[in-house]
Image (cartoon, rainbow, N blue to C red; front, side, top):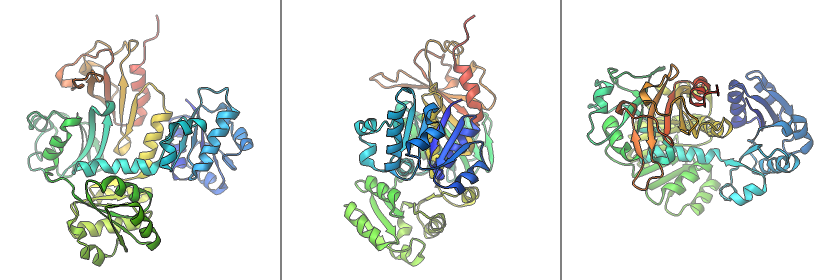
Length: 461
């Protein structure tokens, strides 16, 4: 259990507080709004304090001197930096205190020396996290999510079984052997609201959301087989020219034909100055006449990332109706997220979920190299085997008694080898060796402590 102090009860801070409290951490949160804090107390077992998060007296009263982790999540870089600086200097005897700050400015977040001067241990930017999450599906059409593992040597990808006549109706075992020289394993299946840990005889159905593990080099072949998507994305339309839309267009315009639509004329003028190759359109992304006249139906990927969920949903539905190839939608409200599985969207992005996954990775115990949050509360864990991991070291990966609801996914071996790392699956019979990276699937985050206990050193007799 950790003592965590959160600064800011906005969407990111609130979700972090709820999740960390659910994980049985001791959580205190500071915000200027008593109403926001009162609402949070109704949903989570947290201590709250109304006040200015960067003020030393407020931080003292909140118990910052006893915090193992300080999460500065307010919407202002200046406040987050100031609070981190106060904590670093006021409580300098806490050498182990971790200070994680939300920094929107890419100029600041990329300057490690400057961050250290302000006492920031780790910076994060929700807009950049969302941008990175969208790049995977754009580069790999048919993939809803993609998570890099073991330094990029392997991936876990979510693929919707929609168009693939080859995969539909076949068993898991038949599909895994169907593509020559393309090794992959099906880790889990989301079928409607049901989460399935598949058996070799489990058959694939239309609209199954499948989590697939594979070496990074094999993911394009896996996607092509399971989704039957041969063409790569070439024409991209982005609805919403805010921070996410601008970041996305900036990263894509060198290699793709990019169109950005925004309803504010002044924002369009700014976008035109910042972007060198993208087409910027002033207009309403929910105007079907505009989408039709600009041939948005010919876009390979339509991405709705405005600040309004309703606009994103309506624009995405229109884009799908007029023929856009793939559709991605950004959603903030939980009420909308719960019903979007029934909508014809290829990718649904929830910024708070993505951000919380990143934050938990930094806050949780360092036993795990990486923790990735998946759909439905499932998680993927990455653990490096060391000499004290005697409960698994030297054992067959498949023979280890993993907690019910969890399963080994793969081993990445010889990660530092110049010839390339080995990716080994449990059914190939590998024994666990020193230095291996174990990738483990947990159907619920509640299983993480049990897996951690299994991988910890045995007590001395």
